[in-house]
View 1: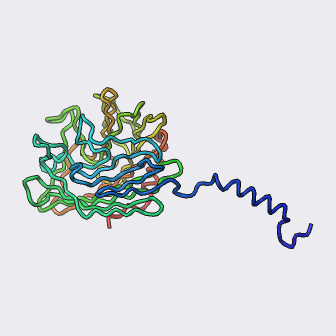
View 2: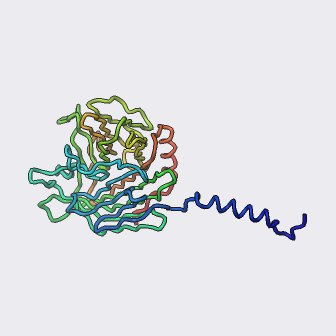
Length: 330
């Protein structure tokens, strides 16, 4: 059959009709996503539901935080300011003690003895629904004028994948002021002044009370589960459970350049309250003294995902994270 290089009319018509049938079921990139921009808050939405939201209004909380944090299209995995610990701010970073001053929780007057302040917040939201957040932070005793510690923070958030997962790459550079800074925590049981609930400080997640059938996975042995807590060293951990009828989790990966890598982890899994919590606790076993004018950098990758991850999956994700260029602070 001669066609002069062209499809016969009936073949071309069939092909065009077939393509037309396919087109309605082929989603466009980013379908259903939109940015929500408010005064001192930025969030990503999927079909009218928040995927994540970054809040940096000091009138709302004494630290900047993310809430909600969810698999795209899913239920929130985080809990902001729960009644049992109102100073838990969903996904947030907080020191416990700097030179014996408490920056973690409020005093009797309702404010922490140590003030966490921030400025120069820049949020770059992109057309592909990824984002980059930059900010400067200062840490000082409430009655002091000069900070004992300053921080440059960058959080790079990927666009959600087809399964609703995405990652947050945190990079934080802390520089001591004119004097050494002792980064400390409440001692753990078995140490002088230690308590069963000691050992936490740093990057933390307080999970939603609706989370059920909670499991903690890691790339190394988690050790004993005592007082509803784990304390262990690993390159990565995954905190997961069932929420709104589906399995979902949040993994945290420790960058190999971090001090005391592989880091310690502090995990609470108490269904009675309920109390679901994970902390990248590099101070868990002992404090860290940062010399005057010196800098320490902490990097973590958080991955919000559907399903439950195995230790093998965590190993694979950590290997990938370790091989990629580190998030730059400039």
